[in-house]
Amino acid sequence: MAEPPSTSSPQTAAEKLALIKHNLQEVLNEEIITDILNKNERPLKLYWGTATTGKPHCGYLVPMLKIAEFLAAGCEVTVLLADVHGFLDNLKAPIELIEHRAKYYNFCITETLRAVGVDVSRLKFVLGSSYQTTGPRGAQYFMDLLRLSTAVSGHDATKAGSEVVKQVDSPPLSSQIYPLMQALDEEYLGVDAQFGGVDQRKIFTLAVEALPRVGFTKRAHLMNPLIPGLQEGGKMSSSDPDSKIDLIDTPETIRKKMKKAFCPPKQVEGNGVLSFVEYVLLPASALRSPSGQPSFRVPRRDQDDLIYSDIAAMHADYLADILQPQTLKPATTEALLEILEPIQKAFEASEEWKATEKKAYPPPAPPPAKKKKEKKIGTRFPGAAGGAAAGKAEGEAEADGAEVVQARADGSVEGPGAQEVSVGKGAEEALGKLALAAEGVQQS
Image (tube, rainbow, N blue to C red; front, side, top):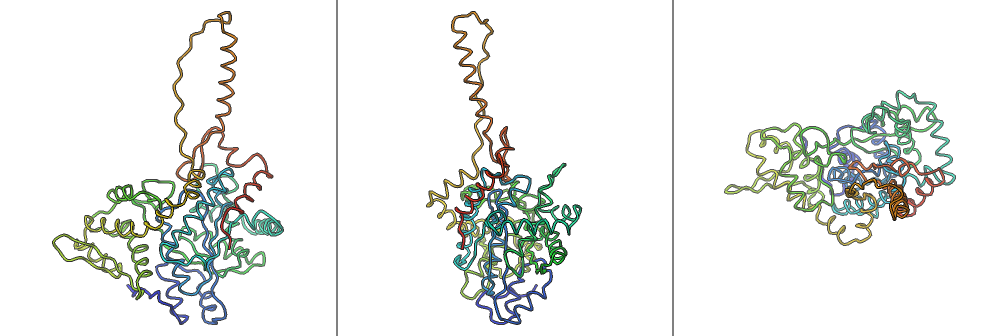
């Protein structure tokens, strides 16, 4: 495995390209990036977007660390809080909660970037609805979306979103709109490249093929691998609480989850703990080091500590049973807690952030208390009228309670009033909610 590039102020185009590509799984249309770096007339412009749905977890550290490396390579980076995309993805971001979700993501992403040493003043934060649904740009965006829809088949749109949009037996049409908007965002954000997980590849391919059909330029695409979840099989996901660690989980919760993490001895493939070291802990240590070189220490009882600067050496020792789960897990846990500590301190110190978290992800409603079964005693019984009135009031209260919903792990809501909460009562109300979100989220 090649030596990891230093994050200490790369100067040449080759050094910048090496840092931009570090730990990525794939790059599409790399020549676009190379051409801009070689000309050296302006910084490379790229964006990373995230749909504001379920709570951000430690898997988000992977793109955050890449953003830090992009900035170190002199790139101009935009973070897109894709609130409308969350709404389109099988109603994972209900219209009633969309403002609070966007604010919560803004808090999480800002503090996570700070925790890995990023100067957030160098980033541009943009809320999707700020240009997708409102004002003159919103009207233009909608027209371009219609134009793009004529250049993409329903089959290709469905295929593009198949690994990103939640799959259900009878998918709504919004699942086809989602990838078209993600492609169109490249044009409206004025970037040279889009960055995301390898699960976005089909959407990226759609963008490369479809945007030129309506007169827009194709962009480059940078893809980081998806780290395995803490349980066997699958990626770290907001919809599976057992597979991930939330950014604001307590240290006790994190230690318990890491102890149960899938980490079989002498198995490298699919090992979420080793992958987390490779894509989070080693790059994070490089950013904190004055030399820009990574280092990961594994303390051992009665033996010398193991110190690694690259994942290849770790894999070799793990396969040889020199590095074992009982020493790897605690070392990984403590290194992760060190990264998360400033994020969690910031959360505890911010009443606004804590209040936003409760509004964005309302706790499950308690189960209704069991009622005693009343005997049928006839309408002539004294007080029957009062009983009828009380029954009517109780029925009205139950009707009001029909609006109560609760949030699921993936960010969507369930309950009798879920549909109305998710889509709003009309377009005017929905646009009003989006406008509120745009006012409440950091824009720079």
